[in-house]
Image 1 (cartoon, rainbow, N blue to C red):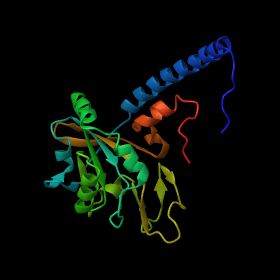
Image 2: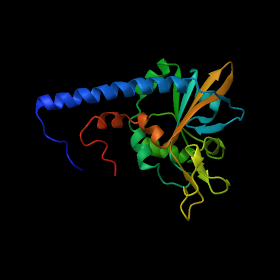
Image 3: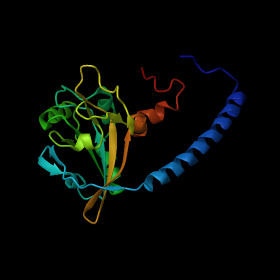
Length: 221
């Protein structure tokens, strides 16, 4: 990886001011995009999804607790896996009870969901000292319906809103993929408002916000 050119303070300042103009333009475009995201139509959730949590079975409605909104982080942790994917683990390690409290101040609850059985979820979570709301969707259609489990039994394989015929390896029957889904509760009904996948998940990883400001960047392999 090549390093930035070494220049005088005056030259650096000139380049920095030019970049600042582009950053401000991007901020305005991001604000406009966020407004469009909030204006997306929503879909009523008709199916009764049931999850397994630390204290037993809970419904999707119960994941909201007392909040009006719910953000679900889809964790890549399949039923036959021994552990969650390393990247999901790294991202999850950035979530803290304080962050969740701040989200609740905005009337928004947070939950993590994967297909691994709750016993595996509990062991994995406790082994890392996490105290986060993590649930198993094992045995339900939740992961399939929200396109974070890809299965060869489905005729048209897709991910991130487009066909992905090669997403499964030659010997794979199914696999898990990353994503996040948002829900709104209104007058006792639940609506699906948004889901993001792949690079759309970047903004949920705090370390990237800082690394993107550095000369060496993310240094992803």
